[in-house]
Length: 243
View 1 (cartoon, helix red, strand yellow):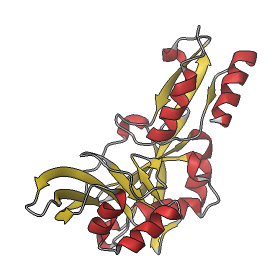
View 2 (cartoon, one colour; view 1 turned 90 degrees about the vertical axis):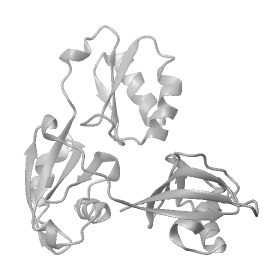
View 3 (cartoon, helix red, strand yellow; view 1 turned 90 degrees about the horizontal axis):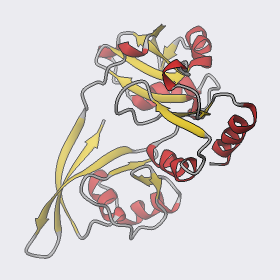
């Protein structure tokens, strides 16, 4: 938030266009809480495609027309023999981070069956194209693509039905990943759990139907449906675990 405030200040003083790193939905909500107080600036989001999870915020003087502003993000396509390798989002992210690029410079990573698309800050695209040669042990070819060529892959997930004592975060983690209650507590206490992208540090925090829960090192899952209460007073839930 401090970095975003610095960009607002620069826009106000120099009348230039500024843009942020890629932010998740929770981070953007925090930014909007104070961006809306500055009447002298306007802002909009860019994520590369409708419904993107990670987006930048472009901040500019109120008298500028949004339609005349350039885009500050771009995209690449990675091609390889992906059908024969079980590569996932973490494999692609790890390979790009291994080039010395910060996570904040990377937007959504869209893993398709035969190729993968990655949204990035425009100023690092050439560097990635020149230096990214492999994903794991799989050689890849990298090329820049237009933003309108980006498309969302179909979601890959496994749906499970479980009964839990309550809708507390620790109970849901145990049900989704088959780990003990103490194991769930460890993930929470170590700051590895987010609910709707908001960091959670208390096990008693309760989720609602439709909430997304992410666990660093495990992945993410959604509390898809609350199916009702059992005779013993437990909650029957449907959980989508994303691959």
